Image (cartoon, rainbow, N blue to C red):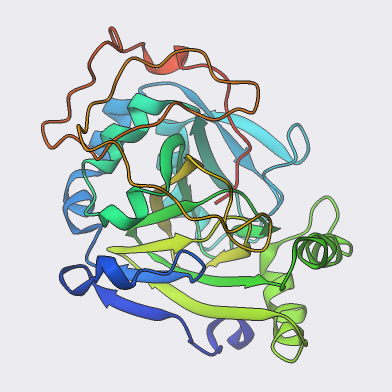
Length: 310
């Protein structure tokens, strides 16, 4: 692997899961929570993944632009992909990055129960999408953004760049600029080698660079641009959260967020409102009950997939 991919500054805050201070959590700062994925690392084995997803077909991206559907991608079963993953490590072919995304409230809750996610992060919104990912070294994703999210890594090592400007317009323009030279077939490894170093000296740009290790949970603030390149074979999940209140950060107003429902009940989910917001949800029920939600649907019938990015 090129030295330019493994030689980079590390300026993100790292906290052990037991040392996380809920009162000092800043939703506008990326953070690594070490040990938050320890239980999941033991559970999310290949056997468990195959049992959960069965023979469902997943998207495999042939470049680092997985959000661009139908371009540079193919469909493959998870079992077939895992069988070929080890041999692809030393391949000269472009790295193939697998994603399996579902807009599935209940499925996301299942995954969160295997993680030690601080309440301050869970309080940002309701889990609206989860995404399983697996890939060889040098696979990755080019710059993109989305709402609040966490990335739970069960195996491997990932390099991150997370960056943002001071306001919405500048952040939008910077995202467009970040991708302008990276068309179909482009790889994140090239962006990290060429474009990422230039961000370090850009005015009005805040940049965090770091490596995520197996067992780490990364928190990504809403609408902060981020890119990833995998330094080792990786597997894990991301979960995105639908905000309960106005967006915080450079993309929206920073109005204070009220407390979550103290009853903690996961009440029946009615139709989404015209703005796409989920109904309010209280603190996570430690028993994991999903009252009034009905029988869980089969994996293949969970509704439309979301864009495939980390």
